[in-house]
Image (tube, rainbow, N blue to C red):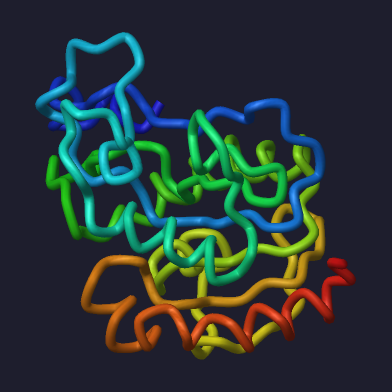
Length: 205
């Protein structure tokens, strides 16, 4: 919808949505900002979100490795064979499903224009939340929280806020990219106590 009349519409890749994988009411929704840039995989029927795709074709991604380390620290990782992100406790998604700004055509670490982010949150993220009914939301970085709420809260602060008429406990934490995770997240240790507080507030066992 956003790219239909946009000057860079022909450059858009298929939108990215994480699979549900039979989850029912996960404890946490981990919300990242958007896919990075999937131009190399434009022809794929299922364009992957490469930063969290562990298949050999995409190489090892530091943000993915740090996310797995974080799940281990928090006791949320599913062990055994298969997708380590297929945890019944965690659903990983993006606030915006497209990898480019419809107005500028830019990808990567760019801000999505307000109309595009509002469309995505209203039409897709809100529906994802309504279907899966998580107990708490965790925004990885400032951008996804601004897309979803229109503002950002201080890092590590647990609050209650409303998205499309539904109220959730939520918190903003550093992204799992190396600089944020290692420096602001203290190599993962900084996440542990804030997550414990969020679990308590949200009534998560």
